[in-house]
Length: 504
Image (tube, rainbow, N blue to C red; front, side):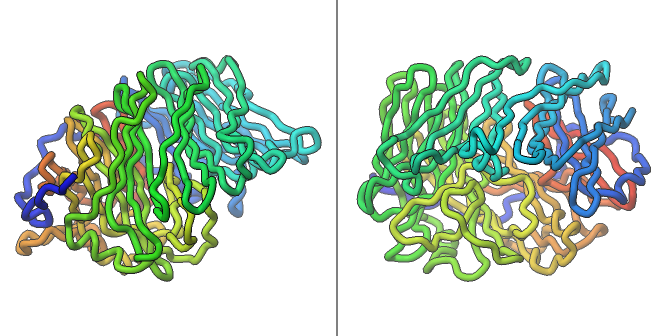
């Protein structure tokens, strides 16, 4: 299928408006606890509840944590929850007006996963055990739980715990399903193919739709035969998608209605870096392939980034894909500079630089905070339901490399989200209105920077809107939490905090 002509003026600033969104800020609270730990995990729900979880760390080790309650926009109370042993907080979410703190605890030769459940109305507390494994009796599962990034808790309808386990040189997905009240329903060991060694099998993710649970794997049978395998948990039916020989793919996946979509970037190692976008659509009703296509970049700036393989500390993450009402897919990737060299591990959910020839490597999730990465330009592509590239563009972020402080670096973060059938990107920065090209500069501080929502309309035009000018309290984009049309950000600065709510 031929490409449509690229849209003109995708990089240019069309207009800048003052935001018409509904913006509310709570009272500023002096918070000396900020001196102990800058890090907070926050969550919200569709009816406006908001909660903050503040770990109390001593020399990098968790020693208790605080649950901070809010009434609408204002802080009301802080409760300390005691922890024991070696404890890590993996996630926080709100379900049925209860905060769920997803915790991993290690003691001697055992590892436990649990949820600390806090009722937001009564502030009562209870612990719900999800899994406990002993090194002596279940060594394989114990080893699997050592890797925090591969432990996933999906909580859209049921609560689904999943992670990959290597057993007798084969890999399977451990899946445990709970009700929304954390009552255990069932447990599964799902193999993509028992005959394929674990080094050639990867469990990518678990997702939910239409009261079904879907597991996505990648299988490498040989150099010329690589596939994605999607398994429906309820009745074990599956479909396998052939990946073109000699192709490397960096992907994410999502579900809209009855379509399961896999999308991202592809490359041919022998010819260099990424060449364009890849796209697969599976009909979940018939469990059949609806479309599969790869298309080269139409934007010259996008293709210029990938002349040759990334070298040194340069890379790209596929942070998100979004699907609109017409089933078009928006792929959002962000370029980064790795500040500290780290080993590249094939198959981890942390994005890696494509340096291993002849295999596929994937990103299905990105950690909320990657302290060793400094992100800049954003690549966006819109792909039709048939897999055809409609347009691609690059949003330029400059001077992030001049931000030296680890805390200030987070001001350069971004938060992509979908609202009103349109892609938006929340970010701090400075846009020079006298320049024709849209460039977001991020080394400017306080007096010159704004919190923006960058809107990308269905035709690929980039439209910045100023939400408000920054002040001493900075609302860091990457800490945003969204529920329906509301976004909450807990801002911090100079031992003070303030809650922001934006209604789109």
